[in-house]
Length: 126
Image (cartoon, rainbow, N blue to C red; front, side, top):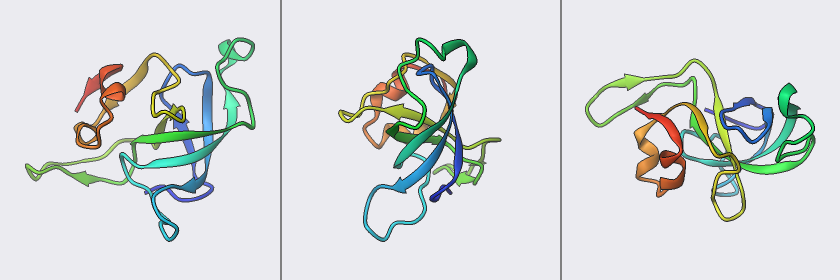
């Protein structure tokens, strides 16, 4: 569960390392975001190797898609799973990811939310 001022890791190669959640999208009373939800983030740190030629800049505001949370979620089969970190993928206004590669697994729940582009560039689907 992600809320305002949560720090998150970035799991793509856009150049950002950590981001901070500014706003949870999806209604004016929505306070908590789960896997598959969109949030507005601000870039806090950049990766050392990509500081000069990254696609993003520090202190810039972007949209992000949550792909992993520490909070557990249940699949239809009754299998309960969780991840070790909270992580996101930066996306543009059209809904396409800024990076060309996603590092780490992505849950199959995102398939229902019509985010096929994120699933296609990921390394593993759980």
